[in-house]
Length: 300
Image 1 (cartoon, rainbow, N blue to C red):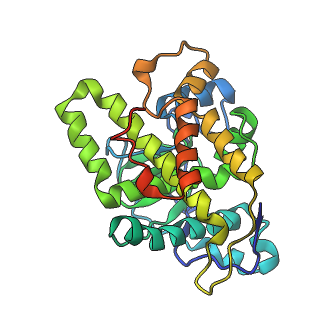
Image 2 (cartoon, one colour; image 1 turned 135 degrees about the vertical axis):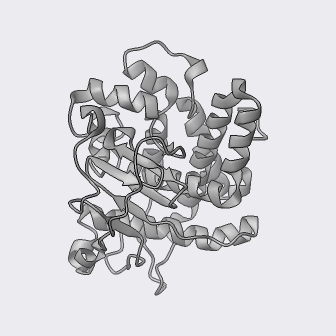
């Protein structure tokens, strides 16, 4: 996978609040960069990676202004080297894809959503969050949140070292944004309220659909362009896609429960098994059609 150093990051795609007051100590002493694998996995098994963080129970909204971190990415030589800048290009690719695809597939206009980079702890419109919950989407402020040290955990501790695992994670979170725009998540919440016994099953379907949307983006990623028409990726191979599929498998409910030292308990699944997550990513990738991602009508 190679990124085009001439490609520009869309303004507003990345907000970097590290050191701006939006960070701080981790909740419960479990920041993602510390505490060891056992502590991280306890937290991840609860959050199950790639969350949809929709309940305001953890704290107050962050009112601090978000610095624009794209200035450091203006140097073309650095743009494809710095992790923050690479993530900016990933986010630009994902959003440019949905700007075109959402109207074509669903007749809805895309609403931009920035990715906010934080360190250790962040306040959001959905509440305060610790790095240990992994990347997540907050529908109350339409932002994706990530502590970039999560990629170290994904690579070194969770067995997904491939570089394409990074944009897969982001594309999954943007899948949640699409669900918010389309009203899919709101419909799911109402079904959960009507039938609490199937709440986890509804959550699994939501997460698998986000994996499928990530796969649909991956299908088109090599052809995504910036505002000037420059391709964002100069090289994207089947091997890169396989890294995304591997990442999906490494963060399945069953795999995380097993890795955390507990028994596999399907009643506690909220994101889907490794096999299910890989399957639905492939559905999106092979079809290239987000309309094929109707997990709620499928037998999963």
